[in-house]
Image (cartoon, rainbow, N blue to C red; front, side):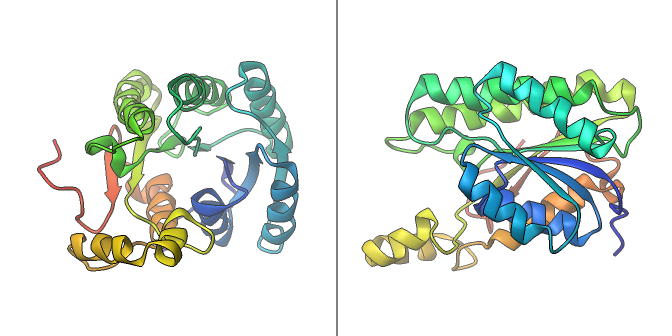
Length: 247
């Protein structure tokens, strides 16, 4: 299926590693042109070097909890790309610091989206995807702030989708479940706490964890005009692990 993303001007945040980097890879493979950011300068430079083998990639460091930096990054990205068609907001403070989580995941994402919307054309090819989490739909012991802001992200997406619908712009959330990759949290659990890791596998109806590519491919589809009537949605990528009916 041709996702018709060739030459689309896309911002991907948090793209130096993990899910963000996998999303950048998937979009470049579809022919998109990217501007990426992350807080870690060395990691970002390494990502840009490798991703550039796939297509056009512009990179700049940015701390999304800093409103001024965020606005300047979007301005810079728009200049490099000649505009913005799509934003993938992959932001997370991580941990259980409520202040940092709100400043990054909510305030940072809000500034990012508002800044990008100022650059976007008014048509269905323009859209925003926020990366949330399965944690938004369940309790996470010792990670209350992470679960709370990811739930708030989904609510923010729904409201924003209604707000910008008159412009033809779509806004959606993609919520990964337990995703395993080298150097990631579940890779570390597998090595250091194999019994707990096995219990997580058994708890998933598909009896396995997800891959970065499985998340990235969903994001690429939602970003494309093949999903032109999908807006205000939260798409779980979790192998049916989230119990209960999602409304």
